[in-house]
Image (cartoon, helix red, strand yellow):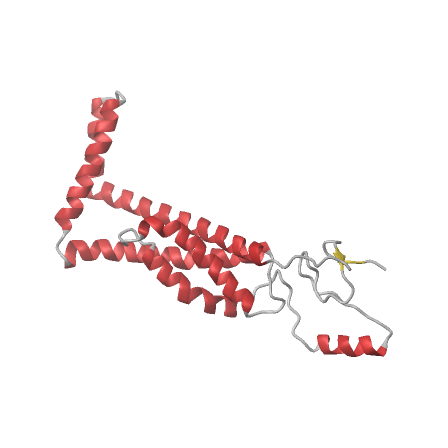
Length: 224
């Protein structure tokens, strides 16, 4: 007799404890003593829904990887250009470590995405903190404020040249330049840049977590 999952209605092989599609634990009963003994051993094992997450275990895998990845993804990091794929790869590796420590040895794509979300939040906040601390240290501790100001002046000059090239109103260009050169304008644009970096890192981490779970998802075994 064909057995189907009560949640997703996909076919479940006889003797399988979990649905290969959604991970729902399957209750199987048999009148044979030998089968009952085998099932009795299975009921003694911890039963876990593949769509659920043991967050204590997940955080133990997340924090040691997400924090260093966030530091490397900060704005002034020498490898910041690789920050986005690095954060995605970090989330995928966190999912791999989590899966390897649990039974059944796979989780759903949605669960992987949620682990990736937490990894991205931790990593993005670390990246934002390191970016702000690096800018503060360069200006006030290392006394390299002139280098930051020169870089910002070049950015504003490029924006002004682009405005002139497209025929923008000179008064509007001058007003925009004055705003960007003011302390309030610079602070606002830096905060916007950091916020955009954080949001993008979270998106890549969610995608990485989902991809990690999808790649390790156990496919149903063909019937004999």
